[in-house]
Length: 164
Image (tube, rainbow, N blue to C red):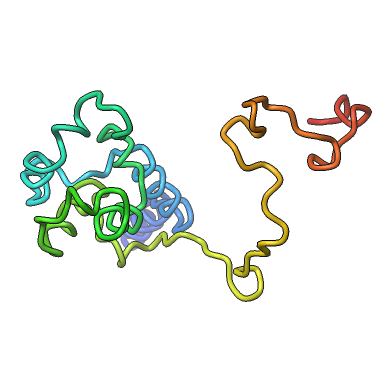
């Protein structure tokens, strides 16, 4: 009888922990919401303030706000700094400093992230340049309409009422 209470407590503790899949989903949700940033004491915070905040903490055209950067995957942030649109602005930063900014924004280390992006593999990786995507503009057509032809959509007008 005296062993029953500790055993029951241990069982109760084990049942209250979230399953690994739930925990992973929670971590992804935190990253996607921007809630897992590195905090103000992170070394990347001072770097972000010095090099990035003048555009990303205020409303500057074509510069996503910090909250949107915090929702991005670490490898995408690092790619933007190293070879993407922010390459020129990050030109004075050392590789370690760029990594600190990424860790500050994402709240985790880039290449070590347990939630790596999914990429196509094998023959699915090849792009058929003879068959470009049917929809290739912001509004889906050159005149910015959001009309999708039935042959592209794979639906007819008769199919629409049956959609869920």
